[in-house]
Image (cartoon, rainbow, N blue to C red; front, side):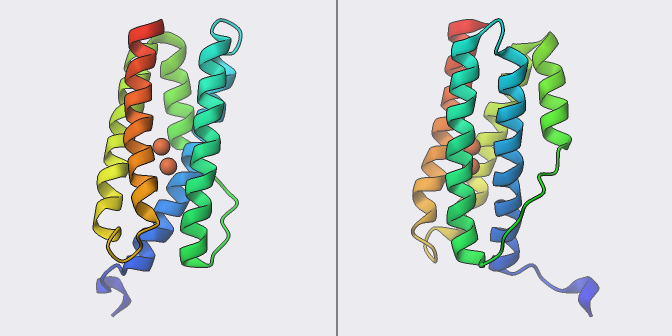
Length: 136
Ligand SMILES: [Fe+2]
Ligand SMILES: [Fe+2]
């Protein structure tokens, strides 16, 4: 019965692929929020967005699927918080990045190319924390 079908590895990678698309969109939206007052931070966000696109591509090679529509919920939420409380927004982003890293962990044995993605997510989390320390 489809309702009780267990999620396969491919289902998880496909979810992660969507997550990467969403993350790319989120960082680009965040860049728009800060670009006037913090151009360096905007540049940093755009750089991370590119890294998320690279992750999307790693997942796409595994799944063989093309996804084009980011789910904007996180981008909207985080961008709004960023306007009023950048420290909180970046803390949420950092936690999300560390969660993404953990979510990839079960798949690096089967797909070794995911290991560098996992390490990038940890770097993204550290980056968000460093931005708090330096700017907010
Ligand atoms: Fe990513
Ligand atoms: Fe990331």
